[in-house]
Length: 468
Image 1 (spheres, one colour):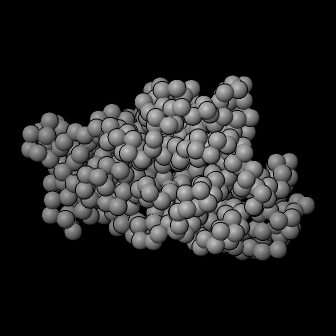
Image 2 (tube, rainbow, N blue to C red):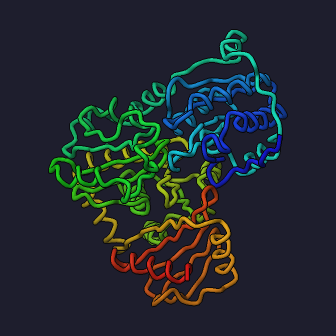
Image 3 (cartoon, rainbow, N blue to C red):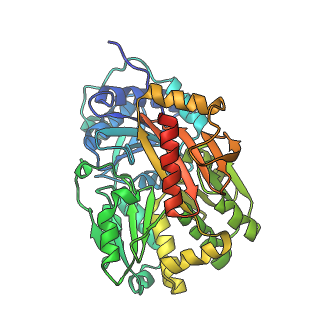
């Protein structure tokens, strides 16, 4: 049998279901994980769960079977769960590792395999690399049922949704939030967060909170272009003043203000810093990925808060949060963690923090954004994902790295950074960034300008320049 080498990208291993993402390959990864765990632990425990994607139960049970057959105890989640539920479960249940069968925001044809560490967040890059190095070319899949391992005491079923909801009840005053003057609309994008808001905020307006493994044919990524129904619902319902959306495994966030205008991750990071530091008097540094707006640095400078910039991938931010005092850690894609919670992205938790901010301050989300703009100025951000083949993608990145671009249409630049991708600081005060996706045949083009029109124009000029 000829087997492909399995590589973990920015956030786990992802592949097309039935092509590369198969029961057998899931078994290979699980064997590598078992061998890695058994090197340092006598009786390791792993928490496993899956989101709402096609085949999630099948793949999570395959992973559990291989781990159990290698002497690793498995705590297997009942039903679908979110990524934050696994991370919280690993921490609360004193497990050594977590596994989430999810492809997060990828198109519905994909599934994936994420690793979560004992600290309650993404496994470190070092640990992921160590597991990856141990993935064998072949694996013996166990012939016995999961019931066999349950009888042996190596498998136990757990309710991670209940654990997570009880945890949230300790963190937030839901009696207060249920009386908020600002009604919430929540779009689960058919993802794993769908039961949480339904159970905790019964008055919220719910969209796409039903089980649809194909996500109605759309990638469950909380971007403005994917959330038109939520935007319309918020804009046309006067009492709704916040629209919350989470992705397929509910670790990423998107928001809408009461006018139905999209509030992106850059703005959400700014809002969280402003609330936690100015209003709640919390301290700690801010850690952001390379693709996040420099307006975060401006706000932190205003408050005297230190800032650290990392490569793209929340695992780098989480690693810092484990060891340092971090107030907010976030990335452009909507993955954000806050102090007082686990070092993990959590779209629902972040949304509840901001809903609490609105409720306690008596200000709408739009008013809270205006408060931030008074300190950092107005800006507009957008991203264009160019679906091109890997050869073309790599050629563009190589040209950029070699200094091959001197102008993008009418937009010149005065400085280049290359922490992770190529970032051009424009003469107009905005910026452009080119970065190849680590999990898909996609070239991401990021841009920030002083208005929506300018930003869209920048993206168009960049596209013409690099694809000519």
